[in-house]
Length: 136
Image 1 (cartoon, one colour):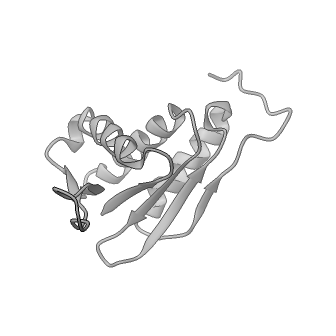
Image 2 (cartoon, rainbow, N blue to C red):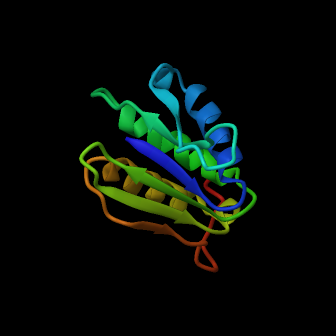
């Protein structure tokens, strides 16, 4: 599958995501940078996406867990576009992610993991007011 980041400093954010993915033992050797087309008047192409090789054995869950952890550490809104090998894609858009409750993060991780095999759109919103986040 491929992962693209949209928004401010997308290339830097994509490189950051790559490092997070490579820190997960199960994903080492399964992640590579994908260069975009060379723009006229430039010396080379920029990083456009990450390619992640999926396999049986919990790899999709590992990817989902890393994506959630990485998103939670962003300081600005972020949108991830995930494209499966069959061309099906979906987007994960998150705002106010550092304010997510533990329950909201668990729900989003479950949705993201399930979405590797099915491709609904997922939109992450800030937690509802009054939601308890004491469960840690």
